[in-house]
Amino acid sequence: MIKRTKKMGFNIIKEKYLEDNFIRKVILGVVILALVWTGNIYYYHQHQLSKAQFMTHYYDLYGRKTIIFNLYYLVNREDDLEVISIYFPKLDYHARLHPSGIRQREGYYKIKTVHVEIDKEELKPPDGEKILVQEGVISFSDGTTENHELGKLYFNLEDQPSHLVTHSVGSRSDNTGYTYLRAKERVTVSGLESSFREDFDDVFDIMINNTPLSEGVFPFQAGKNDRIDVKYSLSFNGEVEDPRQHIFLNFSMSLLTENEEGQKGRSYFSMNYFPVFEFDDLKKIVRQGEEH
Image: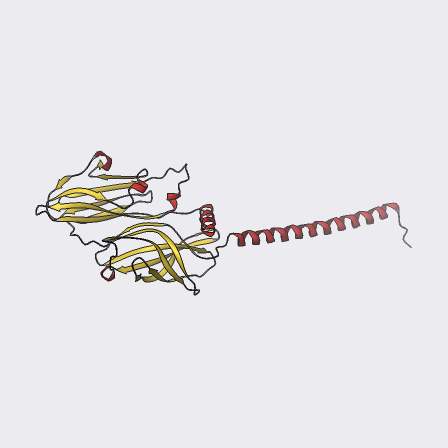
């Protein structure tokens, strides 16, 4: 018979204590893990979109026969939602659409693209030659149809001759770019028009033939085959939160001309800006959209 000593009894008690302590730690770990998992699920669902949201667009659109542009919309990252139809009530027009792609994935969301084409000849201008469209009736692949605010889309329908021809264009990721044009004949260049210059005047700079627009460029003469250099830059103050940074931009500006016979013309060139979003930016946009 083995005699139990005090030391053996102490060891048994110690082992029992360690075993119980280990079990308590395991249980506590499982509880904490369950709480974290539940919290993550709650946080995830709190930030899910109840429906798609269209981003804000400021577009000045033109085209000789067809007006082509992209619209961007926000959906949950795991959703397969697609735009299948867009009707513009202001134009009384069902647009032609092409398969969309994904512009950006960030956090719980993704920004998708829908390519839109409008036959200019089919439009009947209700209010003149320039129409402002701010909303569209959107149908989605899940069977829902909703009215969505799109921003400000100006459709330029006026057909004027162009006395200038685009020679080359280029842009960089720092929101700078250029357009070089040539005169097809001798003309007077009298001005520049854009629907959004005033909205972005403090962050948008433009130079024509290396002279800032603010220094009084117009009018000036251009002979046949003379080159006209247009350079631009868009620069937001990175230290200050500016909601305009989250707007998709298409600055379609036009140079106004007149030839020696007195015929007025208009020549377009474009500047595009496509924002890149942080997760916090998208959360704010989602929150604002859900509250709207």
